[in-house]
Image 1 (cartoon, chains in turn red, yellow):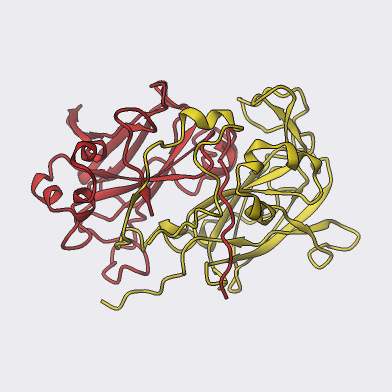
Image 2 (cartoon, rainbow over the protein chains, first blue to last red):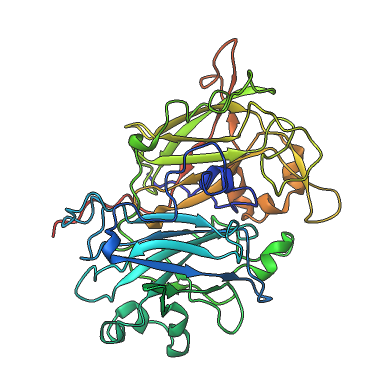
Length: 195
Length: 229
C-alpha cells in the first residue's frame, strides 16, 4: 500500500517554545541546544553564520538544525553499522532570534569522512517563518581541498555555485570558527538539495 | 531519488503568502542521491520525554487548569509505504484557547493563560500511534493582508527514521470556514489539502471528558532498512 505524504507547512514565527524552548527562556526542556551532545572539548569548533533573505536582510526567525558524523565519520544511527560512539548525538538545533546579531552559533566537532567518496560535511536543515518547506544544504570545509575536489555531491553542482557550500575558517580567541552564511536568494543563493 | 513528493507540498514561493517572496529558494533544488548522510538522522526516543510532555493541559499548570475546550489529538505516523513509524518523536506547539501564543513576538490583544504554555512532545508506540491531550487553539489575526486570520491549528514537527523524512506541518480542524481564506493552507496543492485537516473521531474521544480528533501523518521516504555492509 502506498500512502500520500502529509504536506509541509511553515514553522511560523512562534516555533520557539515548541522547538527551542530553553534557548528562548521557556520553562520547558529542549531536546537539543547549540552544542552537539558528546563532543570532546579538545576537538570542539564553532560553526556560525547568518541567514539572509532576498533583500540581504538578516533573518531573525529562522531555526537551523545540524546533523553530522563524529570525528571518525560515524553517525549515531542504526543505519551506520560502524557506530560505536553512542555518546555522540550528532544533532543540534538553534534559532536565530536570541543572538544580538541574529546568528546561529553551534559548538561541535569537525566530522570525519563518512565514506570513501565524500568529503567531510555537516548536513544543515533550514526552517523559518515564510518558508512552507524546510531547505536542506551541506556545509563543507575549506581546509579539505583534496577531498572536496573529488566529492561527488560538490562535483555535481555547477562550479560557480560550489563556493556557497564552503565555510570560511577563522581563528578566534585561540579556537577555530567555521563561518557559514546561508543566502536564501540572490547572486550568492546557497545551493539547496532535493533530498 | 527525492524522498519528497512535490505534488503533495506547497511551493517555496507563492503569491498569497507574502513572506515567501524573499525567503524561498529561487534556483532549482539540486538532486542529492542518498548517501549514508541522508540514510541516517537524529534519534530521539522515550528517554527525551518528561512525564507530562504529551499532556499540554497538565505540563505547564501554575495555579489550576488551563481554560478552553479540552481535546485529544491522536493518530498514526506512517512511512511512504503505509507502514507505521515506531519510536519517533513528535513535537507540537500552538496558540491557547484565546488565539494567543506565549511569545514575545505575539502582540495580539487576547489573554495569555498562566496555566498553558502550548508546547508538548510524544514518541510513537510500536504501532506508530501518538496521543496528545491539549486545549483547542483559537483563531488569531496576522499581518499577511487586511483582516487576515489564521484558522485554528496545531504545529507538528517530526523526525521519522532519517533526515529525508523530516517534516514540519500544521494540523487543522474539520469544518473551519477560515481554511478557504488562509493562504498558508491554500499554498498546498488542492488535492493534498484535506490531508492537513483532522477528523472528529468518537473512537479517540474520551467520553464525558474530551472530544477526540484524529490526524494521521505520512512521512517522506520508505523506511529504509539498515544496510548490511
